[in-house]
Amino acid sequence: MEVWANSINTLVPGVNLDNLTSFIGWLRMSLISIHPFEDGNGRASTNLAIIMGNIIGRKLDQKYQDLPLLAQKLQELKINNLQTLDTLIGVSGLQKIYAHWQQEKGNSNEEYWQQLFKKYPWILSQVFPYAVTLFGQKMYVGGKGIDNTGGKVIDFLYQKELLDNIALIEIKTPKTPLLGSVYRDNVYSISAALTGTVNQVLSYKDTLAKEYAQLLTNSSKHFTVFNPRVIIIAGNCENEAMNSEQKKSFELFRNDLRNVEIITFDELFNKIGHLVEVLKQPENLQLD
Image (tube, rainbow, N blue to C red; front, side, top):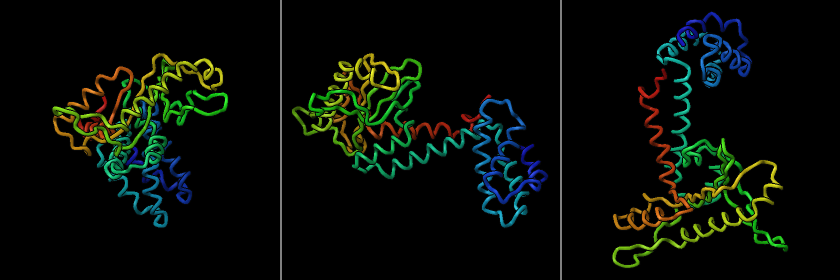
């Protein structure tokens, strides 16, 4: 970083600053040439070049007069390597998503959340302990009769990267109620919306297993269905302000489900928030 910063004053005058795209490309190549074989430098140098290119791009009319200051600021960053910079840029993206959740947690529009998870599929991937990829959204899992009715469509399918097995994810909203009224003796019922969703996704899983062979034949991508995980994203524990007995009723219900996992929106996004806090600590950004 220090070598690149010191070189910027002598290197830039030979480059055409009038074309910002070309200049960003030049910045990237000049940076990665310093340490071309270190893992992660390619992506990190691209990110840094875009940032620096846009900073300088705002000053194109002033040509080179701001470059010494830029070089000085780069030296002050004290970033040990490009991988650390890449991590910092990643933290910024995570922070934006978490802030977005804080702003929209009261949004009851299911389509809004569908589009958010479609745009950022890595958010839902946080619910898995292994590497997955988005297999598809609004996927048909079978169920049509001869009259072309009754088809079942799951919100998202994710697939294990190594084993091809898929998982079903059904999305509701943060405003979906989790609990109903008190049943008796401080035992609370589960909301009709949530129990209905549980039966809905179990029906999807059953139909998918029964029609797997036909669906695979007609699919352009290979997948397997070995007792796939079924996940529901619904509700917001914080929003319901549960007391200890309500929490107990909810936990007993979802933890005793054998084939369906229920994760609330705040649990999903708080996991991202905790990850941000971990990555923001300087000692956690130092890569040996």
